[in-house]
Amino acid sequence: MNIEGLIRENIKDLQPYSSARDEFKDMSSEMVFIDANENPFNTGLNRYPDPQQSLVKEELSKIKSVSKEQILLGNGSDEVLDLIFRVFCEPKQDAAIALPPTYGMYKVLANTNAVELVNIPLLESFQPNVDTILNAQNKETKLLFLCSPNNPTANSFEAKKVEKLIREFQGIVVIDEAYIDFSTQESWLSRLNEFSNLIVTQTLSKAYGLAGIRLGICYASEEIISILNKIKPPYNVNQLTQEVALKALQNTVKTKEEIAIIISERNQLIIDLENIELVEKVYASDANFLLVKVDDANQRYNQLVKQGIVVRNRSNQILCKNCLRFTVGTKMENEKLIEVLKELK
Ligand SMILES: Cc1ncc(COP(=O)(O)O)c(C=O)c1O
Image 1 (tube, protein in one colour):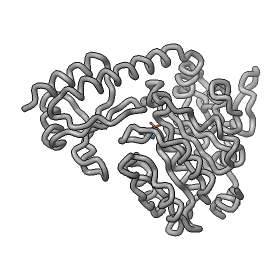
Image 2: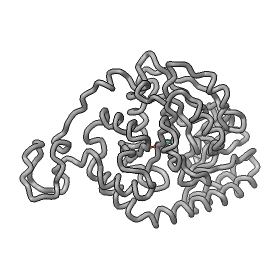
Image 3: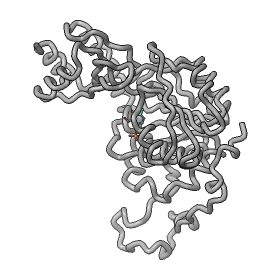
Image 4: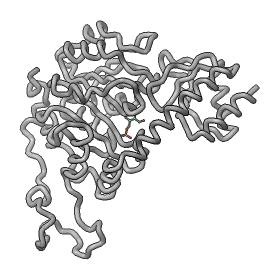
């Protein structure tokens, strides 16, 4: 696919900001750095952070078997998704497709960037309606967002459907894999080099337990990454975030243990919820949360809050009538949820 043809004209011609650290990178040597108007007194944080986050990317490159040049990091995946809109969508002209019910930020980011968001609802099975999506595209449709595993439905999209969409969609396909570490499905990263129009996003906010540091990851062809790099703010990933992320990525034992516990807790929670009278359906989950249909979601939501348990009411979303979303908590938290639900009248 001709990716160049999908990029906004003003971005193609854009001269990116060149920071002091872009111009002189060798920070390890015993040199005098008086180039960036920093405070010279060393606190460990008085210098601007590496704008290309080389150490974090090196670690990710090893773990994910993707070259460093195919990685862009952002202030959470939300920033990465925003950069994608800004590179490919001409405001008030271009469009993107999302498949509701899905992650709400696609709509917010489309609105912020004055881009029309075309909604093609998922099928009752929560799978993408492939033919309708492909028929909905025209020359202004630049982006297609596939959230898999999908928030809030918790399922993964069938690989065959996703592949057909990547092959036949005429724009960029963004697969949001925020929850991939909890899934039985393989990440699309392993097939990144097969498709020039594929972007995969991941995050340290979920399985890695680092929502507070804000680190989102974008994987794509070198061509796409180099364009996104042109428009990203120079120091979008701060020093503290880079340090904490690096440590987490260098030792993933704890993360792997926690993922195993969360999955096991999720499976127990499904069994326990299915035995509760007000629960009508627990949807299958490939994520760290469950979509649960209850008798009256608004009433149950308010009752749970009164008992000190905050869940997400997804009732007003298409296909989610009377549905609540429960994040899998600690064993104690999950037991408390079950205990409280059992007592609700
Ligand atoms: C599907 C999906 N993508 C992305 C995000 C946001 O990720 P980050 O914390 O990296 O901005 C979320 C957060 O809930 C999500 O559900």
